[in-house]
Structure formats: C-alpha cells, structure tokens
Image: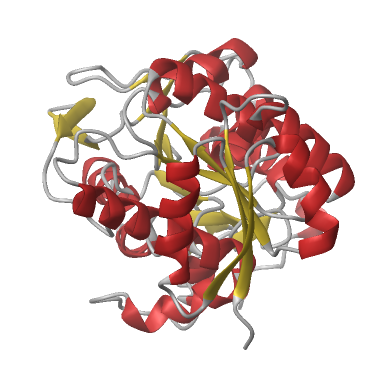
Length: 380
C-alpha cells in the first residue's frame, strides 16, 4: 500500500521542518511538500496531489481560515488537519476552521519541558488522526483490540405485554459520545432539539480545556435548550445539556432520587479524558434501563464498552451512520459489536432522539384499545 502523501503548511520554518521529520519517521507517511502560507499551498496541491494537508491558522498572505474556505471549494474531499495553539484565541479559531470544513485539529504542545516531549506529543496526537482520516475503513479493524468486550451477536429480546406490544422503559436521559467531526455533528443535532425537551442531555466530545467551554457556548447560541460546560454538583434538569470539560472525566451520580454531575481527573481511558466510556458507564448505573446512548462520528474505540454497559442495563444505543461520519471509528465499532439498535445520518439524529424520548414517555393505555370486533373470542 503506497504511503499517505502529506502537504505541511506553516509559516514557521522550524515547525515545517519539525513536522516533516516527525511524519517522515513513519513508513506509512510521506511528506511530499511544504508551504509557508495558504496561497502557496493552493498552488502546490494540483502539482503534489497530497492525500491530506496540515494547516497552521495564523499565517501571512492567506491565513488558515481563508485557506480552508478555498480548499473546500476546490478540493471538497481533501482532509485538512488544523495545527492550532492551546489558547482562547487558538481554540476560537480552531472551532471556526472546523465549521468552515476542516476535518480535525491538533494543538501545538506547550509546557512539555523538553523538545523530545514536544515531538512525542505531536507524534501521538497527529499521526493516528492522519491515518484515520485517509483510511476511514481501517478504524473498524481495531475491534479485536478492545479489551474485555462482550460482543452481543443479535439485538436482545424485549419484554412483550399480553396485548402483544413491546414494552419499553421511559427514557430519562440522553448520553452522547463523539470525537473527530463531533463539533460540526453536534452543531447539526442541538439546534433541532425542541425547547420543551423533557430530559437532560450529557455529552462527551474529545477536546482539551478551553475548547469545550467555547464549544458549549457556541452550541448554546444556536440551540433552543441551554447548553453548558459540565460542573461538579450541577443538577440534571430536563431540557438542559452538559458538555464534559476538557481534561476531566464527567460522571452522573445518584443520591436518593436526585442525579447530579461529578468531575474527576482519574486515569485516561482509551487514551482520553474526558472519556465516553466513563460517562456511559455512570449513566447506566444511575438510570438503569432509562438511558438512550448516542455514539457519533469519531476515531478510536471510546464508547464501545460504555455502550455495552447501557445495553446490559436495559437501555438503547443508536449511532451516526457511516456516510455522514467524518470517521466511522467509534460508531463503526459499536455497530460491529452488535450494540446499536439503528444507525441514522447526522441530519436525522435529532429527530430520532426526540421521537424516541417522547414516544417512551407518552401515556400508555391500561387496556387493549382494539375495537371489540377485531378481538379474538375467548378459548372454550
């Protein structure tokens, strides 16, 4: 298989050389060229034919945001990874870039203590994202590496009432997990959630500090329901959404009949903090069968074991479909494990979430409501 061809775009000669050396150290990757600004990069794309480009945000002549717009217009399928700073300004610009069509981002290492640590940080963060974005189907092969997975070969049976209807528990909370492509996917879902949504929503989006706060604020601006970054002790109220803060696991805890949020900086799970598995495991424990889990676009396996916990408790899990996912790693692994009830394109997820929640909470008839003429006579 030929190596993945990469175009590195950054106004810093030092960064261009650093990225080129790191990426070229992997046999599956090849840096075919570099550029010092967006205009030069656009001129080189048809000549070099890269499979992916890394793109700095702050550059002269044509900055990263302008370049993303131009790339998406001319090369709509070319994956673009933004290389941004872990600052308020950098986080805001990164979210802008994602909304304009960038595929993902990597933050420049800060306070790592040594150049070797900085190199390792970039290698661990950047290379897996390059491979996931260029080879989407490869993510599902990671299924065998998910430890302790108890695969369900078929959908579990439902309890059937005497009238023949399936008996479903009410949905009292919606838990969402997402990663690569998640900010744009959430921006599709949240504005379509109605303002009278009757249950709380909790979300893990893999992002560092600052980013999650700005993401919550942006979603709140576009949504009919309140969206906030999670905070310890916050009560889970109907019609409110909480985004796990960067670098903190977020859990739902139950004390008596009350549920609230808990934050901790325990060990990473699936190389992530916050982790979807941590959140899903906690909602399954706090709400039992009354959970709807939703796994959306993202690379890696985070969310698979948590989906198993939700299913074991009697809840349901739905996923974003492959066609609308930037990377079908997380939802694809849930599907390959037989843990999802159904898959939906991102533009239908909000409607399906709302339908399932409202349908589960609708009043149910106490007696068989069929007309007498259609009922079978009693056996003699």
